[in-house]
Length: 447
Ligand code: NOJ
Image 1 (tube, rainbow, N blue to C red):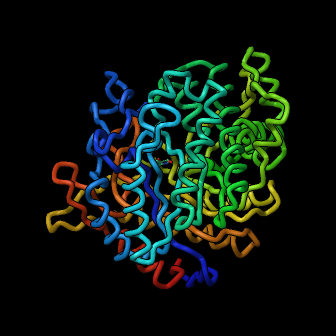
Image 2: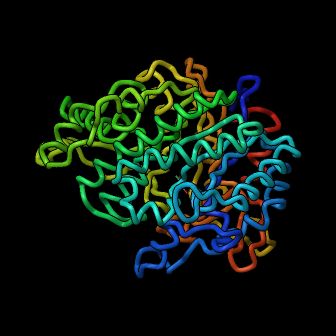
């Protein structure tokens, strides 16, 4: 055991997202989102759960900010619900929606907590989906317009902006695999959504620069740290393919390296080309200020010459968490080292990392989520190691402040360091909240 000291000025935060916590879906003229639609389709979400009420954060945000203040967090990552700002279509801005985020931001700043705002965390206005959603190129301009309204309104108080959260998840899960909103399964639609999402990101960055805002802007990607299942050269090649179809597909264009050739070839052979117009790749590569990195696990890979992509997931070897992925705390440091080297050591914020641990309150009411504490200890030790090795990581956000609506899993998966009772909406800090408060206070941990 040693004490792992994080660098001076390292920031600790918690993260959430609008649809997962806000509720109040009809309040203050909020428009319908694709998730409101999706959750009402039978069989889409476990238990038929919806985000109609979620954690009722829309009304209880003062209490939630008090919880954050108790933890001692320096920064809070949340998302703005696009359908609260543009409920009905382009042009018509909803002042009441803007007012809510004004109140939230001011309340955070009053407690000395810096807001970090995600513009898109998956709750697309339904009116945009009705126009084709991410498959329609026009969405990039609609997003840039929405981004401009947010920058102009909140840019005096918000210094950290994330354009999109995990584009691989809302494009692929929503349009190729179909298990998330809008529930489409079509490779050529998926290819379009990938390109339009990245284009929307690039346009928002350009709007941000043109507006002369003083803060920083970046994008957050979902990540898996890929590892070979054995040490053959075929498997080593398969790991590179896995990285192409995931990490490089989304990071490459943003860092000016374009789409990976293997992915382009594969999609074109299936009549699913990326719809790239002249100038698009330059727009997508508009320089950003940081890279947002989300990471939860590793992926063990083996070769699969029979399939077009050349790789597949090998059988897991580590204990599985309730989400079905391996408990692999070393993955965070490993991935940060990989992505740093691959893209020239950018400034990184870990915009999400956390553990699904469904521990419920014991007889005395305490919630002893020791699996979460053990794994967080491992994740943070690995991250510390990557920083020691020269990776430029400046902040870490714990997902999540509190248990919330876990998309297609409904309320059956708990990621909070604060427990939410979804009957009473009572919040109770878990043991891990105490652990995290300690890490923050000491700017480090024993590991
Ligand atoms: C990634 C997503 O950004 C977030 O919405 C989700 O709840 C967590 N990971 C946990 O699965």
